[in-house]
Image (tube, rainbow, N blue to C red; front, side, top):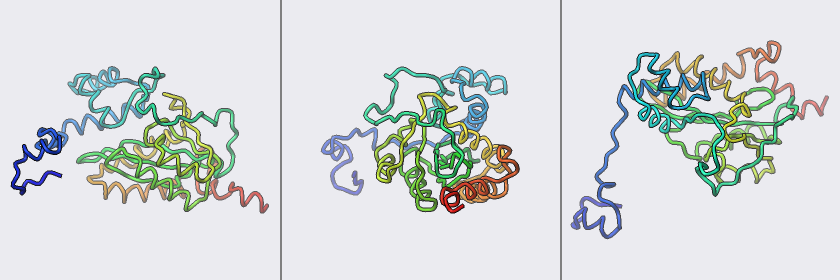
Length: 276
């Protein structure tokens, strides 16, 4: 929009376009090594204690030897997309224009594949920087159907993962998410509504409503991400491709009597039950 080779000065161009000059000259600085280290620690603490707010996370960081103030912890948590889980007043809703859907899974007996799918986003630390991961899981089998990485928290990578899962495995009856703006955005919910998939959303601040995918994050991070310390998104993508194949096809799930998620998924599909 601003052409630095133009005869008009940058000041004149900004004036014509009604832009602030400070926004043109500003160059974002990369995060420091100390901030990246703090974010890794915050991620571990939040994974263990999802109900901790910035004060308790700061206290836990102090116990680990990090001299850091609450304001800095709060700033980094916002950057990571992390917040404490508690009931908030309606005035705190970030996107009041977005439709919020009721939670449909309470008391529901989920014992077959493609009955309920769930999705969530988590923060992924790297040696130099960080990114975000979305996974779509079949609730009945815990199988990961699709996933994507992104360096921004928009809806596009969520839609990409959703469309891949639908193309590969068909449509679920119900799709459950939290009330994050990525999932309440029309670009995401339109994909579900166009296929007549019932939309379910967790209660505000109720991480237990989507507990199985929260457990997936713990497995992903402690069994792969924290051990490997990937240096780039390309490395994370390659590593997670191997991990999710292992998770689906070779990792025995304790709730399924020594069966893998893939075994449970393909043995409980409605088509197979109907054929039997």
